[in-house]
View: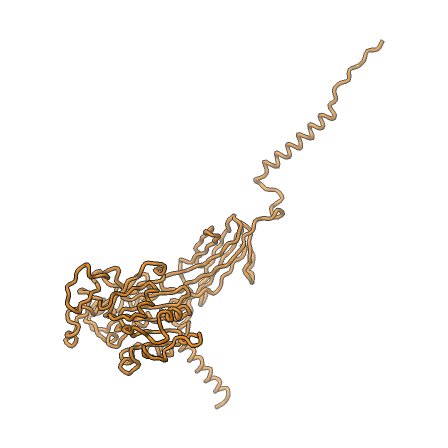
Length: 466
């Protein structure tokens, strides 16, 4: 083989490998934790795992109680993403606990976590710190209006519980997490435990993705009790099935109350004809597409916004290589920001009408929505002409964009707004013309008085002689 041919083939293979592994912007090392690392447990989620491998992830599988399960080694994070499909485990491994999971999140790692009716202690403690509280053990989600009728083979264990929900009540604000194709497709088959979002400082960081209906409630039917209002803690609007969390460092967590949502059984279950938004023919449940989309969001394969550049300069002057550190009061400036959004394995211009600029000194003195000026192949350019406040001091030029399902974009620049020096003012001010006239009239009057006093002598009386 000639050297040029060998180099061309090598470059092509390298390019193909790079394309296959470049979808997640935060890395491709993925750890899947199962109840047991045997063939039975792996086969139960093989469709989901194969989908992850097809998207370019380097998937490692570990048992939940394996001694070799470590998220950090010598202080370095060993994986970029973590999937926990073992909700019954009270402990994950000797070296993984709720504190370790928080450290993994703080270090930029992303998680996809599933819960069940016997949700374990470590994982429950972890999600509570995110502002998510799962229902008590033994309770399951039930809906007598939105459920999948079970076949004869399943009636022994699942009879009349109506716990196989057909869920498509997606949060209207979570369009960046779940696309319209999933919303308008077949319902998601769900069986598991519900959760609620706790009030507190973490609440703005948690977004319900899939919620229950007004007819959905959570209850323990294991002993056949009758349902009463005092027994149902979670119902209707407070009941959520899948939620998403994004930390201040843009690390992401998806919390689902059903491990079976990702199983081959639910991926392959066919819905009755005419169920939900399906056609007259039987179609598979929407679990496969839904699982792909929420995992893609969790692992930074979509919904990522990047601020590429920020420039500001005095109006009428060329854009400098470096942004100036100071301006004068009431200066006219131009503020420009370039933003891109990542999805479908490439960067696109980010179009949004909520990009705002603020000039802040304790309180915002100036707030302006930046209009879209133009777009390039990968960026959207937002720019606005601004007049700085007539107040001098140290200001923060702030661009802070936070929307449901998108990474937070924040740019803070410290800029001094200076007063005019005594020699910076113009020689004559229009507003001071009355004072100039007063001074001039005073001088003219004084000169006139002096002239009159000097040259207007009294007449000298003539003396008589003789």
